[in-house]
Amino acid sequence: MNRAVRRRPALATTALALFGALSLTACTGGPVPATGKARAADPASRPDLKPFYGQRLQWTDCATDGYECARLTVPRDYARPGNGRTFVLPVARAAATGPARRIGSLVYNPGGPGAGGASSLEEGMDESFGAAVRARFDIVSFDPRGVGGSVPALTCEPAEAEAEAEEAEAEAEETSEEASDAVAPLYPRTEADRSAAASGARTAADDCEEHSGPILRHVGTEDAARDLDVLRAALGERELTYLGWSYGTSLGTSYAEQFPRRVRAMVLDGAIDPSLDWRQRVISQSAGFRRSVDDYAEQCAEIAGDSCPGASPQEIRTLIERLYQRAEREPLPVAEDSTYAEYGGMDATAVLDAVSMAMYTPEDQWEPLSEALREADQGDATKLGALDDEEETEEGTEDPGTAEEEQEEQKEQEEDKTPEPPADNSGAALTAVNCLDVPHPRSLRPYWDALAPADQAAGVYGTAGVTAELTCRDWPSGGRSPHRVDAEGVPPVLVVGTTGDPSTPYAEAVSLAEQFPQGMLLTYEGLGHTAYGRGGACVTAKVDAYLVKRERVRPGATC
Image (cartoon, rainbow, N blue to C red; front, side, top):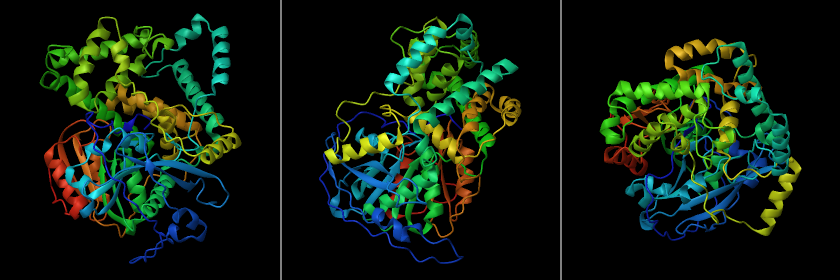
C-alpha cells in the first residue's frame, strides 16, 4: 500500500496561542499486573530498558512561539537495547490551555507513514483538536524513528557529490530510446513494460539499502509503538491517551496489542485493517480512490462551483481519462520552474498521484484541482504538478540541539555511512515502513497475477497500486504478518470512519472496530480523508467527550 496514507497539516493558518511551560517528572514505567489469560511479560519491565524508561525530557522553547521541544532517546534494536545504538526523536508539545483542570498528555500521530509529528504540531496541528481537549491535555507529538528530524533518519537519495556524479553519468549515456522508456503505463501488460517496472522497483530498493541499510530493519510500526510507550513514561503518564490519524491508526493498534493495559483512551481515525494482506490492502485503498474520483465528478459543481473542468460528471470523467492516456504516450508539458520539468513533464503515474492526493480534503483541494485539470487539458500541467508539492520547511524551525548532541549525531551518521537525509524524507519512510510491516512475495508472478483483479476492482488506480508494491519485493522482511487485533484487556477504543474516505476506506473502520474488544465505531457521512478536525461539531463533540470523560459512543453513532 505504497500510496500516501497521511494526514494533511492543519486546516487553516491561524495565529498560534502562547502556552505556558509545565514541568513534568519522569515515570519509571514499571509493569502493570496482567489479568485474564497469560500474556508475555511487559517489555517495560526489562532491566536493560530501564535507562530509556527512566529518562527525563528536557523541554526548551521551540523555534515556533507557543510550543516546547525536547528529544527522546530509544534503542535502535529492542532485542539489543544495550549495544549503544539508538534513535533520537524530536518531541513537541502545546501546553493545556486550562492548566488548573489538566488531565495529562495526549499524544497523536498525524499519519504517513513518514509524517513528522513534532513539525506538524509546530505548524498548528493542535488547532485540529477540540477546545475541550486542548484545555485539559498537553497536545504532544513526535517524529517516529527514521522520520523527519529523527537521528538517524531514512534516506534513499545519494549524497550530493554522489548524486552529481550519477547525474553526469546518466546524461552522458542518455539516448532517445532510453528517454522514451521513461513513460511507464499505468497497467503494464507487455513483458517489456513489466520488466521495466520490476527493474525500476529493484533500483529504488537498492538505493534505500545502500544509503539507509543499517536502519531499514528497525523502522517498523511495532518498534515505533514501543517508542510510544517510552515516550509515555518520559511524559510522566501511567496510561496513554492517544489519537492517531490514518497510518496513526496502525501505530495505535500496535500499541494496544503490546500494551493493552497501559491505554487510558485511544481514538483511531481513518482506520487501517491489520488483517488484510498486501494484495487486499492495494485493492481496498485503490477502490477507495476510484470511488472518490467518481464522487469528485458527481459533486464537483456543488463544492468547486464554476471552476469544474466539465459541464457534467461524464465530461469530467472523460477529461481525466484523456489526461491519463495522453500522459502514457508522452509526459504532459510543464513550466521550466516546475518540479516535473527535469523529468520532461508529468507522466501518467504523476498525473494519477496528483488527482488522488486532491481527494484528501475536497473542501480545500477540489477547486484548485478543477482549475489544474482544465489547464492540463489545454496543454499546461504546471498547476497539476504543483498540487501535491509539500510546503517548504521554514528556516530556523529545527531545534539546533547542543554541541554534544550535534557531535553524537555526526558520529552516528559516520558509523552508519549514511548521507545527510533530505529535509523531507517522507517518501523514503512511506516505502520503508509499509514494506517492512506487510510481507510481500519475493517472486514477480504474484504481482502480475494481481493486476487483472486490481483493474476490475479499481481500474488504473488498482493496477498502479500493484506496480507500486514491486519495491517491497526486494525489501528486508519484518516480523509482522496480517492478523486480527489481539488486545485483550484494552479499554474501549473509538474508531472513526468516513464513508467517502479515499485512502482508508470506511469498510476498514467497520472491520477494525469489530476486532477490538469493546470497540466503538463513529461514522462520519462525508467526503475526504479522516473526520476529526474537519468533520464538523458533531464529530468533535463525540470524540472530545470520549477523550476527556471516556464517554462511550453508542452503537450506530453517526455524524
